[in-house]
Image (tube, rainbow, N blue to C red; front, side):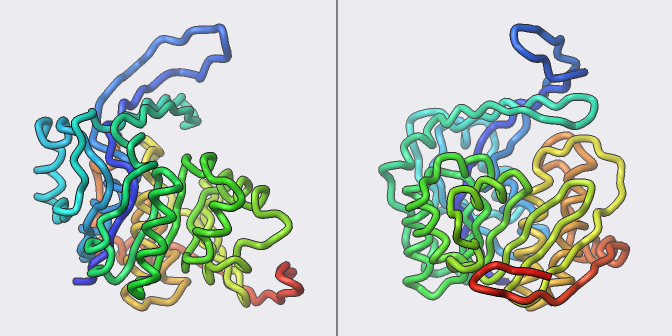
Amino acid sequence: MVVVAVVGHVAWDHLFRVRRLPTPPASEPVLEHVVEPGGAGANTAVVLAGLRVSPRILTVVGPDFCSHGYESRLVSLGVDTSHLIRSVAESAKAYIFTDEHNNQISFFDWGCAKQLVNMDPPEEGIATAKHLHIATGHPNYNMKAARIAKKHGCTVSFGPGQDICHYTKKDLFEILANVDILLTNQHEEKVIKKIVHPEDPLELGPTIQVTTLGEKGSKILTQDKEIHVSAYKTVVVDPTGAGDAYYAGFIAAWLKNQSLEFCGRIATATASYALEARGTQKKTPTWEQAVSRAEKVSVNTKSVETTRGHRCS
């Protein structure tokens, strides 16, 4: 199987259900509180493993990662943990509050991941992979990982998630120069465009830009076409981790040399499974299951023209 190195957080997700998200100084009772294994790096790796891709994760974890059963769980699902960096500090924790309309607000305790700023990614773990996916994490660590990947001829995807706020303009220019696929949601896309303005992200390195649009589906941009992918209609239990699942599906299909249209359909199908459970790694599809749902996802492709780096239809 194709080996994919994944850089991104491994964390414990504290998932809270509330009726509404209060505005200060109001208070709101917690309706439900569960703790689940999470983190964008681990979430993506778990989904990749189910899609017949061989993922290895390269980040820092604390002793609780092993002692609380998280590591053994990942290994049982087919995730290679042999390149992890071990710390004496506790692993990261996410505190995610979701209201009855699936609006969310989150708080992140970096834990041992604070140390990433001064750490070097394990070069062997990247050099022996075909592809590197960079998710959340400190820009310094992630930029180093991207440079190593390009040095060894790996393709690179970049989905910075909530940590996009830590990147400077210089950081983004550097990392995007080593990226093939840029993966974001609408908010992250706006932040990136604001930071790199007046440049177009597709002029800075990536040849493919993918943006998830929630209930409106997703869009895929290249220099010569724009693809709109519909959403898959399902009952949403919890939206946490759906973006990670989407990215994993897209990467898996792309590495299997599928068309961009089919990559978008597989990604949408994969994300739909994550939406159906509380816990980012609770419900992940096999490749066959994703293909079955992908058949129900529609796409619309149109050609675009480029003028001085700015697309117009």
